[in-house]
Length: 72
Length: 219
Image (tube, rainbow over all chains, first blue to last red; front, side):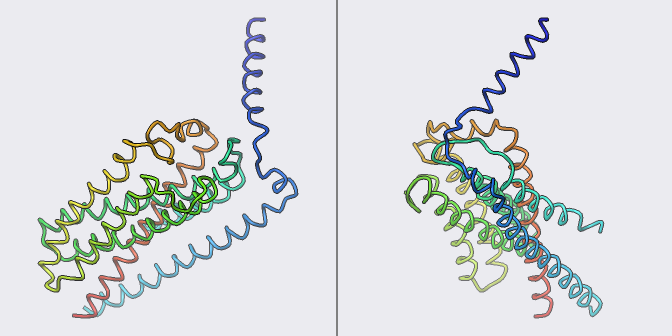
């Protein structure tokens, strides 16, 4: 009984935590109609593109390093 | 593959934190609203900058004792890469400030000191360009760097805490503690810092290797 009461009490306190500051304006509407994922997709595409570019730069540099060490 | 694992890790962490940082839940706080997510992108820029400047000062010390040109090149390229992140940190901070503090530049102590510490490193690069003789340049700029680094640390971590500042965690400002405790944000913030530090280090190695190749072809 004590255990159940304790669990319930903990649950109540955590529920309280989730419910706090619900009046603060967040981008809830933006999220609920799903368009935020478009923005996330665009940002991720840019980021992946830049990172892939960094990898190709790295590869090209490695090739040049190899070439110049062969020469010497 | 054995050597590139950390580059892949950095790329994965940066992509993960971008997705999770935009989509996962964050605390609902007044004024900040959704801009609290900037913590995942603005703050790691500074961490990356500080790590790169630390690498630079370490190689400056090494170059003073070893007197090898390669250590001097490492020091200057670390500063070059670090400055990119510092400028990005300043710009992102200014944009964030516009929408939460009301102005791009509100002469907040931390804002001012961050700008000054970047100017310190601009001075390092200018000083280098002013000296033609290579050994002299390496020595003088290494000594300058050893003085500039603690100045940067004091400007960014000590002085802003001694006065009231709009930045969190300074001068009695309640700070990010309230949401540092939020485990949801920790799950994104720490990987973001590590990821951007790795990317910053990667950019530094590319710059360094390019410079070594350039010097080789000039011989």
